[in-house]
Image (cartoon, rainbow, N blue to C red; front, side, top):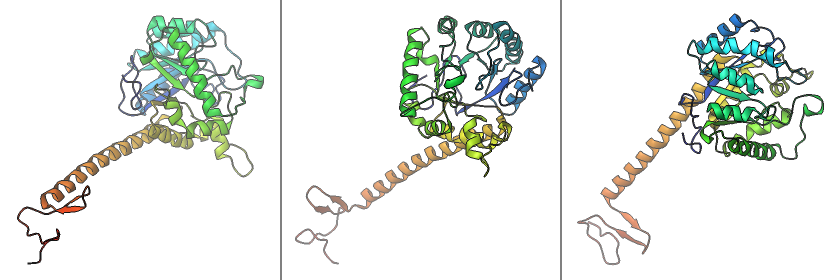
Length: 335
């Protein structure tokens, strides 16, 4: 892959020709979005397969809620939740991502068939994470993170959120590279909703080009998040429930795809799968239009050359077609 051209691709994962769709399977009882619906292993595997049938290119399996104020589960419980689902989906040929901050869960998930490690801490929560992923040669998502979403960390303080997120992500990527993960296996994520308020999230979405300027494939995870609730709030200021934010999520997905995101992470897949395909069709139409426009311009220039009458701007004289009578002074003579 070239990490400096287009939306890029990631070594170790399929090379999708458009923005990929990452479906979410939360094997948790307390997710902000769909807590408890897929807590059973059989239900979770079925849900992951349903997401693929609806258009997901890969499925992100997580066993620990990262919503603000969530209490961390212990290692044994996270393993119990995640590994059977990863194994079940991978055995069906699904490209699986594991959403974890623990190196042990990442290692066991990769051994069970996962293809990607999606760590919301970017390797900061567990010092063993980067060496473990590097040893496995797996792709790794580096998200912008300022700590667990507890107490004062729920909303971060920024002077310039775009500049600071870009700078902090760059520093984290450098640390990940120094830890042995190859540059062609790195994905970056601005961490929408993590130590950020609605204005911060919207500013980051408005400047995805700055994040793409880091030179790595970009994952945008906006699905059902608080900032969308703020945007959609009614006259009384009350946001709609998380599961009523899917149309807004699809809108963000289309914008992210248009901007050049490598993938979008969503809970409800069908609408976003449609949105990214429409964005891709528009990209292709634009590229075709540019090619046709260039061909038309070349054709018009060739026709003008054939007719003659090319203006010589260097001396201000007009070059007449061969065989034309030219009167003294350079003007074409009347017949």
